Amino acid sequence: MNINIVCVGNLKEKYWRDGVDEYSKRLSRFCKLEIREIKESRLPDKASRADEEKVIEAEGREIIKAIKKGSYIITLEIKGKELSSEAFAEKLQELPLEGVSDISFVIGGSLGLSPEVSKLADYKLSFSKMTYPHQMMRVILLEQIYRGFKINSGEKYHK
Image (cartoon, rainbow, N blue to C red; front, side):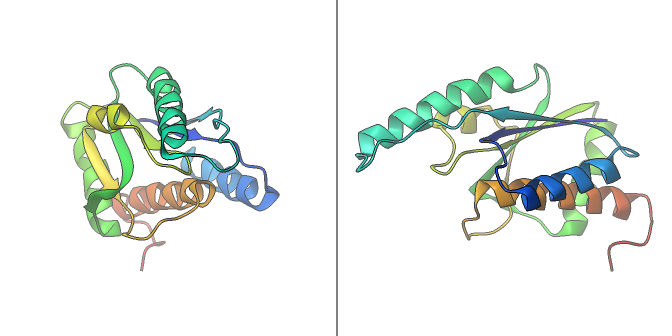
């Protein structure tokens, strides 16, 4: 299985990079992982709603370019469906049985996803009604993907 993470911004802090590196290494025995970072658009000081919309749309265009053609698209959205770790693992296990070999997870920037990106989603996933920094979300997503593979392989990791 090929897993692509399309995300806005790069990880500036070493602790986030270390977390991503650790889970990338752990995932290497289960899947081929690729992380595609999209440049975060600059928002002017005292930005208006129109300025924010321009940023969301610009980032959306870049996200769409980075999504691997033909992949199953899972967007991370507050209004998406919340799953338990077991249900997420089941989703990861079912997709290949349905002929899916490429999954692209999309993490938007600090202002969220554009409507165009959201419309492309095959599945909208929410980790919580709470908002998390998009850098942190990358690590949380990788951990949950790893947990899902461990659950599906019957290995001890998940309680």
